[in-house]
Amino acid sequence: MRMRPLGKSSLSIAPLAFGGNVFGWSADEARSFALLDAFVDAGFNLVDTADVYSAWAPGNRGGESETLIGKWLKRSGKRDRVVIATKVGKWVEQPGLSPANIEQAVEGSLRRLQTDCIDLYQAHADDASVPLAETLGAFGRLIEQGKVRAIGASNYSAARFADALAVAREHGLPRYETLQPQYNLADRAGYEVALEPLIRQENVGVICYYALASGFLTGKYRSTADLAKSAARGGSVKKYLDPRGLRILAALDEVAGTHPGATPAQVALAWLMARPGITAPIASATSVDQLQELIGAAQLALAADEIAALDRASAY
Image 1 (cartoon, helix red, strand yellow):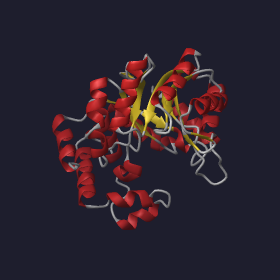
Image 2 (cartoon, helix red, strand yellow):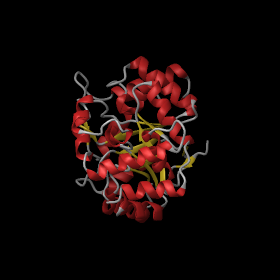
Image 3 (cartoon, one colour):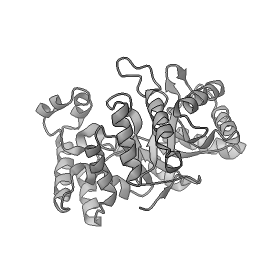
Image 4 (cartoon, one colour):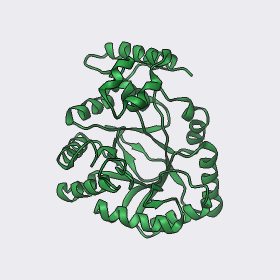
């Protein structure tokens, strides 16, 4: 499997990332360990999480995902086979991107992950109240101390991300090597219009989230009646049930039909993997069978005319 670089850093990853938001929420400890083992044993290596995961779940406060990953790392002995990415800034217990908060938050993440170095430490959201030079300076000190290998950003606008890159150049600070935007076949404009030209010009790695549009691109939801299949995701999927969304599903079905055994979810992920500038889409699974389906996308090569058909169906 061909590895892809994360920006200009020394980190290289396989073309699919596992979203750790499910650990400690919809996947308990045993299931989480099984998923991580299956993912890594299949040749993939990037596990993406955040300190806030999964504070939204009843009975959780945050830190659960990192804690389970840390237990798995210690039990499995597979630390040298994975790239661990986590985030800081959105947890109510460690909010924002001030140097003081970053310095405190990283210690908690390192402790929960049971590692002495985070491979990719990401700003989970922009914090306009803190000068970019101060935030990047704090990240830079963590790199100097050996606690972090590379840094990235999530949920930044094109203007702010460009500013961050400029500040890094101007002050000789480490730059964000990755961007984590929402991007999928159904949500294209937010990334493609302004962010994509910037990241391709600057050679920044892109690890996009909501790669399957909250499950819509699996084909599971094709009518309002289908929304009842998932109380957790039905509300977020409803917005896609319009003529454009149905065109996208029809195109996914058609392309999948030309590849024996392929599914709409695999085609949707393969479309992302084929997009210039995309390092790896993030996808989550709560069973090993689901994970194996997602992994199959990495072996699915779409023809140029198939990509063009998907582009037309999803035009905005």
